[in-house]
Amino acid sequence: MNNQKLAQPELADVHIEAEGDDLSRSEVILKGALAVGAVYGAMSVAPFVSRALAMSEGGDIGILNFALTLEYLESTFYKEAKTRAKASGDLKSLIDLVARDEDEHVGALTETIKKLGGKPVAEPKFDFPYRGTAGFLKLAQTFEDTGVSAYNGAAPQIKSKEVLGAAGSIVQVEARHAAAIRLQNKQEPSPEAFDPSLDEAKVLKAVEPFIQ
Amino acid sequence: MAVRKEANALSRVAKDPVSRRKFIALGGGSAAAAFLVACGSDSSSTTTTAASSAAGGDAVIAEKFGKGDVGILNYALTLEYLETAFYADVVKSGLFKGSDLATIRKFGSEEAEHVAALTGFVKKLGGKPAPKPKTEFPLKSAKSVLELAGTVENLGAAAYLGQAANIKSPEVLAAALSIHSVEGRHAATLNTLLGESITPDGAFAVPANAKIVLKSVEPFIVS
Image 1 (tube, one colour):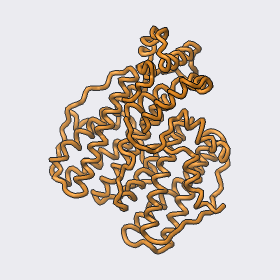
Image 2 (image 1 turned 90 degrees about the vertical axis):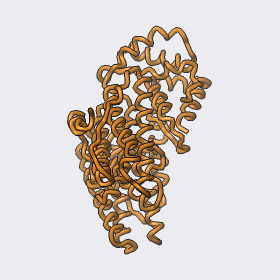
Image 3 (image 1 turned 30 degrees about the horizontal axis):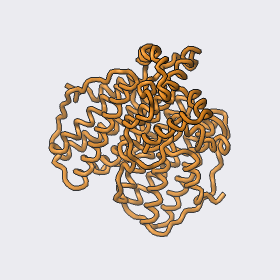
Image 4 (image 1 turned 60 degrees about the vertical axis):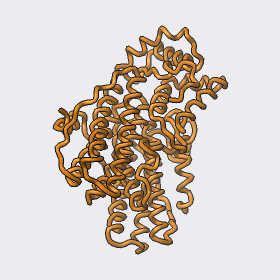
């Protein structure tokens, strides 16, 4: 949180969803007004803000909340694994690293949803039925590979270039986790030349058994 | 220092009427500020937003490889040709055996599949695929080769990430993303073999613009 250089940072955070590719003239004006307001603190643009917020309940927030649900799952899974996976050595370090990354993803997605004017989904309660290191690794591999496919499937539908860039930056980290977990599992780290993508319905079906 | 960079860019905009106009023209760039702040990245690497990379380090793609998606695909194709040639040379070098050699062969074959897919996409879009560059790599020891492989894969992943937001066609984007995460897997594998962090940028991977990427691979391209 280091946007104190902006006179009115809340204006810089307002995101506007356009219907289709063409922005209406008023939307272009609104965008400009918000940008100026963010830099100069022009109070005169304030009346536009509520309207902009109302417009921002679009697809990107939905996708971000979908991603947040998955990140909650991973974050909880690795937090628990610190004790439940009975790991030592390299695997223990890996679990700590991944737990930290997933936690940061949760934080970033939550903040972004709020800043775009949306409401972050509540953290679900999870139940992970596994025993020991082998059980942990098997489930971890499934979650990481599914996470990669989920982001890859959802990303082309993201409208905002900035949100797309951010999702890309997270999915690459998920892919790195997936490879490292697979190596621990004595599996091919990169099984295919092209990572498959999964649509939201398929991903939710895959993680449903773990959500209470 | 993504966050501070963004703040600096904004304060520069506030002082400079020309970039202020550009900023207003970009408009929606505000969401970038939102996410970059949210990410709170502490990385000292260069972070480029879609807006700044389009204006700066990525102009070289249109110059060298053509405009739009075809240009981006040909840029990616050139990088994939380079990776394929690198792994082929490494296999021939005899520096690796056993499971390391198997990994190198596997990665090499995946890069070759990327070459084929990108070539197909360029043609499908009515473009002319970029030619295969002539390459030369320093293959002195197993350790230095692994280090180079790590550098190349991490750079490749960053290169794809740098272009994701510039791609127009959803189909091309989906293909690029499915390759991007594979490059990320390769990078993490090599980092593991090298005893380095699998996520050197932390929880958020950092993109690289085309200017930086092309400059980095220049030493390996003979013609």
